[in-house]
Image (tube, rainbow, N blue to C red; front, side):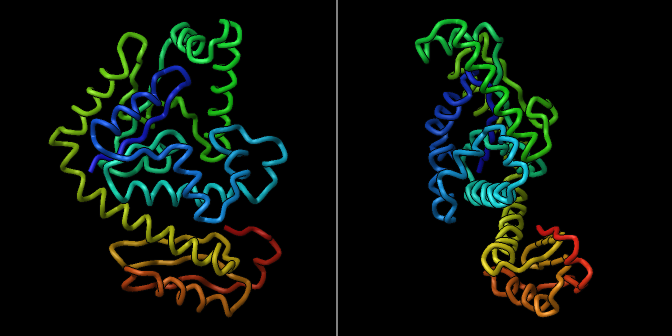
Length: 276
């Protein structure tokens, strides 16, 4: 049940490595195309994804509520994909969203600037100056994306188990190295724990979706913790009727066995206007 996230510089062969892994391990890849499909099922317009997908958002996007909605459903798509096991997640901050999960391998593909430039010149049939501009633009966009949505520096090596410099070897060699890693006894021993924790995370996300986005209950500081069917809900509402609704909604979600509803009512919180 290997789940692999790949963060990559443009021109580092990261996409090629992901394609080879999917072929060799007979698994699926969560990339832009498949994420667009998942977003369509959530009712998120394609325009929202195009505006945010691995891009540094514009100034006015900082003031829009689309950010929270986009991040919520992107997290849901990644969690649902990872819960199936045996898959590769290409970009989109997968290394951050799944960073605390055992049994998920986080990779970063890099390459020296000159080699990246040569690859981009060949790929886009452009000159050296244009290739350098393309690379700089891509690096700025991906840096801004990770800062805006996760508050993380995507170049931080602590986010990854392996950082592969493909300047001196091929995508095929890199894919083989990764396959050897996921086949080790130490990595395979974590599969059961990974599956259990992913099920808990998916359940937490489904409850948040039901409360915030389906029923549109305004819960400030909403927190949901799940442990094999036992769920704890915390938050603040400014409508006393919403207290019971939160617990009722959570109890109706499949695989929920017990709900500890710790949401409380405070009429003063409405003045803050801060919601999950």
